[in-house]
Image 1: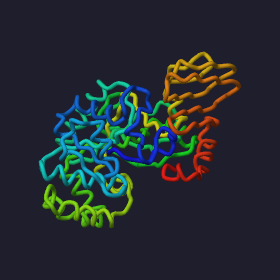
Image 2: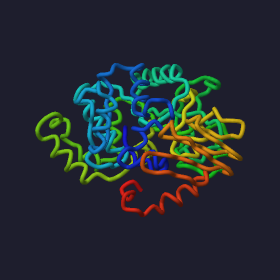
Image 3: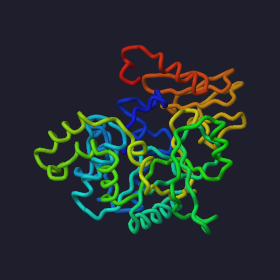
Image 4: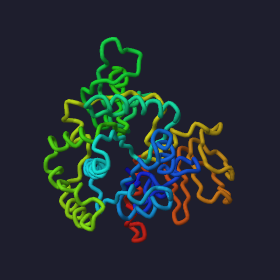
Amino acid sequence: MAGGAGNNLWPVCRESRPKPFMDVALAGRTFLEMTYDRFRKILPAENILVVTHTRLAPLVREQLPSLPERNLLEEPYSRGTAPCITLANSHILHRDKDAVITVTPADHIIADETLFARTMDAAISYAAEHDVLMTLGILPTHPSASYGYIQAKRAEGSEGTDAPMKVKTFTEKPDEALAKVFLGSGEFFWNSGIYVWKASVIRKEINHYMPALADLFRGWEEVIETPRETEFMQRAYAECPKISIDYGVMEKTDIAWLYPGRFGWSDIDSWEGMFRQIADKDASGNAANTRRILARDLNGCLVIAKDKRKLYALKGLEDFLVIDTDDALLVCPRDEKSFKDLVSGLGMPEYEADR
């Protein structure tokens, strides 16, 4: 799933070029490219589909030139993960009614990709043998208020092992105090938004818990790759509610299961999150993607430079963001409130579409 607005990572990410298509992680590859490469180690290239908004399809083709044309699915409107998954599921059922599917956002960072592949293989094998809706739950390393949480119960005798667990509850992003309680209980995991299930099982659950959405896509498999496909898609999406698969299905179903992940995961959704993710900081706690910095009394700052040839002379800044792109320069305190207050106040016409 490759979409999103990217407002929290402005000015690098824009509405016209959201996070999956950017190298925000400073890895030399965009998030989309890294996600594609990661799953190429798990399954054949012809089995990888990308779902994106129509206006972003050229970016997918540019960054993944080897992706088969029929594997790029375009949504006319952004309607959340439930319609996105319903669309892709219909295409997959059209090709293979016995398929087992992995669903993943295209903007995550995975530290240990070898362990990630082993974890995915285990989750896929379990989902192939059982009628479950499996989600990957990440063992929390700190009481983060930036992620949703899943409470899951270990089966007797499975303590200390990575085995599937029955989901008890889903919780939206908590405040820090509640996150500390979750962390201390040992029963809660971060919600990664990565799922594994049979195509037939998720269709059955969508039909049961989201019948209105299912009705909009009824008959879709018969028009896939025919001249009627575009008209059908426009009509279905025009009436689609904007809703997540968690809210629409996962929080209601009684077959939600969790597979624990220990592979080092993060979903960077802010510059503050980016700053925390970077381990390679200087003696004053500054993180930067350029060495051309003349620094005096610079502490706890994040400096992101588009032009690595430019010299940045910085003095007297503590806990600041300095984010430089071709057409915008952001300098503001690093805390998320200051950033959001500034970006929400951008009223210039040239930035209106990116707010």
